[in-house]
Length: 194
Image (cartoon, rainbow, N blue to C red):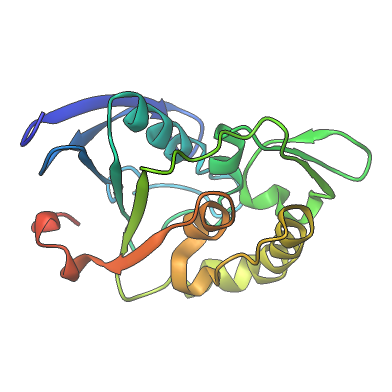
């Protein structure tokens, strides 16, 4: 598996099915370059569901260290879509189930964590981020992300990481699985990506 690219088919940020290549720079390590994956998306309607699918499939294929290389601009759904893929269910005040996207952050009133997949103890997830942040999207969704963070804390008992530090994906993932964040420049195996 080392040095080879492996195809993964998952849901894209706007709901389409897409293929993405996972690289294996060393045994049990899988690197996903999400820069092209997140090239085109809408701040309100994009989802990170496909990233959750990548995590699940990478583990099925034996990945123990999963690296997600993120561009400066990527969906700020607070990881809601990713959490949905991992088994979390979201509901509005009327009990209607919601799909994970930025537009639905403000509508979430409750969470059902009974079906969530627990992270195996020997699996580690690293987010490789650039230095810049998508200030425009942060401004647009700031209040909604704050609302979502409070709900995550209320239902999980874990304080979500700061979205400015870990991105939208890291905010949700950090609560349920934990996540390590580093700069792209600090990982030699990512040379040439993004």
